[in-house]
Image (tube, rainbow, N blue to C red; front, side):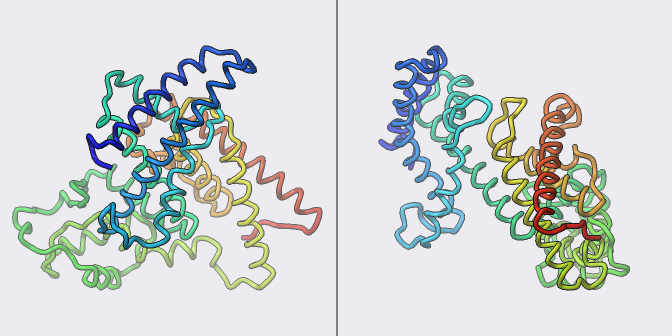
Length: 367
């Protein structure tokens, strides 16, 4: 879908109608025929918007794979991921009862009453990209929560360090004189892996790993530039400290089959509780979908670390890893109450499920 195209015009006009209907819906009384009819009309318009957002999501995915948005050689799974990406946008917000996409459309026109088709396309394109990023983070968290947690901590450490800074996806070392090293090559994946394997002693945390990697780059012996892409650095830190992080958790000694079963039961119970609370939580603030997802993810990760790893950091750090622009004063003023309430709700649901499962067989906390 391109700017100025008939599809863009059709999407823009549908969004305009949805905005007008949403304003009308706010002025009707629930239960009245007019209220029901307005909701029905919004639903019909959403069918059209859904089609266009699916195309947007599909185009974003194809571009990320180096394929043309209108190509016919796309993998079969691409349509499924596109549908999963926009699915949450067509669910109702528990705080207002509006669909997520209706809320987003109303925000667009409240901020820019004179928005044209291109404005609408750019705005909803950004909404789809954020939804895709959120969906992929969640999928990665489910597959390897330790890797994703390490990546966030690396980013947080870099962004709050006096020694390092990021520019265009590359992490630079302020302690190194880049005027003398700017012509040196960046470390290849093989060189970086070799460097990390040679670190002694093995760093025990993310901060130590970042410092050690850049200390070795800055020594100059490898003739490499003291700079790394953020993604390469995150992967290097993970592969360096992952054995240490595992040893700090449940892998301190071999587990017998019964302990493995208990751990699996605990994790399954925790995942079920987290999913249920994330779906049912009543929000104190009128947050957008991305912010709500960040609060849920931060709360889930915090509760997991506090309960099972006995090493949780501050709640602000967990949320800031999902909302990089969140500052301490904003956290205290806007997000803290909702995050703490979410954590409390998650803990209560988790304990309820454990008590219920003890009726069939005791579940104990593994050490």
